[in-house]
Length: 448
Image 1 (cartoon, rainbow, N blue to C red):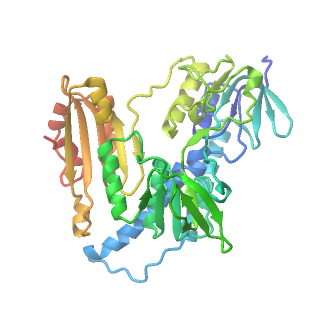
Image 2: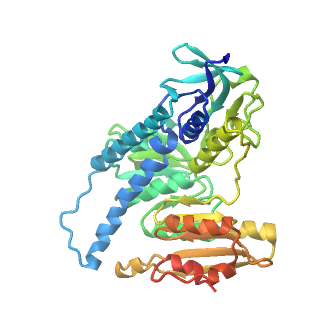
Image 3: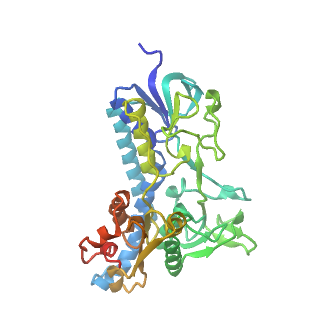
């Protein structure tokens, strides 16, 4: 008979925590999970899933505008933010129920309250109850960072943006990472005046420079205004509820909503990890080894709370690897190379592998192939926006080192193309592949 209440206690029921719980339970472990907010975590409840639904909703503005060029007459067009917002929130409810059912179907107990570490094998719930477990897994994810400036309490983050009571006319977005650029595109498409302010002159740091430049050109043409090298200095709330925003040394300007999207940090505040002798990293992250184990042998951590790679599929893989290692008798780690990623901006961009700059630094002698084209869909719509695809190739071996794309449906195309980079295929393999015509994806195999 075990001396513990559970074999595994998971703190955090997001993507990584739910996967680890489910797989561990399938191996016969007695598992419980605590979640202080809603089961599903950032991605499902207040992140990539509802955000992508807003992207879909905002795309209709462009589709309806272009419809007349294809022979359609659309009369009395009208957008209702409340309908889109509430439809998205209902789907979040559905997904939370689905995640909860997953736990129930796998006989995982769940506590809807905050839990903290109270020792190497103990957790304490907000209700005061203490529970023992042979292993503890921390999967509390990340939390938006809000810089310190006067009036930052009047701003919102990506947590609150899904609950806006009305569609704002003027939106200021601070930051130029993927969250910032995605919401800037959403609000711009829905007819808001969007101003992006950033402390540097670089947007989407880490993505290929050619793609970043193309996105900047297109979004400026679509009406997004940029203020670089001037972060927000002050936000003042006016009597009518509007906001007066001061950035850098410029004159103040008015806004209805200020969305701060300047990054996320691991959500480790007050977790009690010191009670198990665990020291946090410089950014508040939990240091772990290749198998997600902390400095305490009975405590592990996966997902954004470790600040390795902040992506949902990575948290899921880490959760799976943890369960396989600890309860499945199959020790394995998670690989962090060749990770495909996308920014659901408008238009979207997607990448896998090395950028041109990274490849030159690592390999020296490389070849770069590009296709700069106007998507067929844009021709009838009289839209001048152009797509850009890039292949980065090792000149010595002909191996594809990276694929980078901006244009309609780029993420959908890139997922399949990422297999080629993972499989270490060559440019000759691409050249030998018959093009699927007419499609945008065919550009990948036609570059010479």
